[in-house]
Image 1: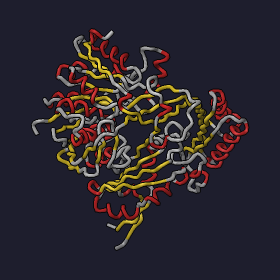
Image 2: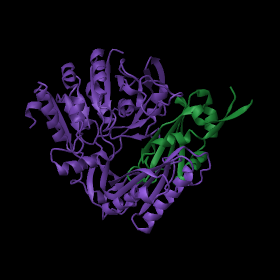
Image 3: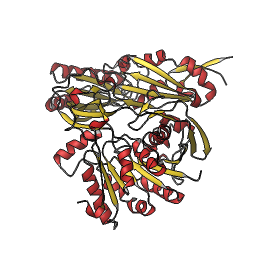
Image 4: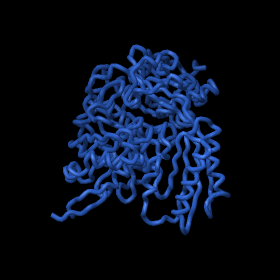
Length: 109
Length: 459
């Protein structure tokens, strides 16, 4: 089977939330058939590396197979959180789209 | 499905669209079913800002849009027997009740029963120094900090009590957000305070609705990928909840937005960490067994949410006076934009360092990298992509004093003469910062009080 590399944004959607200096990013494939493939490729390590430049220290992925969703919880990713950060986006609401820029390899249709 | 109770939401935060409520109330009335409406108006820091307002004016410190939010719907809701609940009391629920009472009298319904729940403000009653810090907040020495506010996240029980005593409007300060939906469900279905499965479902209802349009297409729409009808008029959500805790999430018919599996999933996981243990003061919600199904146009059924025994202690969030934030921006455009923007950023940081104006400073190149970047500009410094037509350079400095923050921000202004060729469009501002810390407090240290009076009696 021929594989092509695409950004997650082409095949999945995500929303970011915050609590203090910890962020969560949900991730859901549009097509539930891609769930196992994302489970294999969108690992805690890859997601943590995406936020290493901001000092993220830990990433835990919770799997919700019944609704074909993942929840990534990332510690220390908000540069101090909404009250401490110098970032324009202190809540880290835009970070879902950094996750969606990660690439995955999927079968060509 | 005959025994349904409808819960509508008309605000997801202080600052939300103020015209959300009328379509929701019309839909609730049209359904002919028993219903309640709630407004969520408090983020973590909102209550501290409200406390500062209250110090300036003892009759202030509640949701500034309160009258505007309730004016168009108060009479219709009262007439239809739809109680309204909200944490729009913020730092001053009693003054908020007086505001609602005045509005009710003006609208010709002086017998409107208004309930107030107090007790969340623990700033003078609980010594936080002796309590366990919550989550990642351990290990800070706060002995020198000046407290602005400390509020416990109280649960649904006192809100339900106000409803039981006939309140048609329930004004609260800090409650947990889902409790605003759980309370009318407890009251209507007679759920007890230890009916964990029912309360777990109620928490899911509250969690899905508490951010208003976020479950009906807000912060969801992504043109070409997740399109929604009429994003300028997104309908706010309604949950049709059955006694057994199953529910359908929907929205008013005559509104924009969308309710589908994608929008429900995004909100179900919003701000959730461990999906098996989402803590609220009323119940620990567990969504690991949740399932959902599209059962009609803009209608999604949710079932399988579980509930576990509530935590022993309540979360208290305290806000303290912090440092000052100085910010400024200028633009560059046209040929050699990237080089001029980088040089501008470096010179601004050098000026702040040279003058000793900040504890921390950061520069962003808006158009290259800002919100995804780090304080040291890791992304824009290593950027080697194409040059954009324009870049806006932003400086942000944290300073110990207002004057230092102001001086730092004004360095951006000075670039209009001292900056690179073609520097333009300076804007700068200084804002006070807050520090927040959370604690876990035994429930018995946070007694609540409920008062219910007719509008004519609130003076």
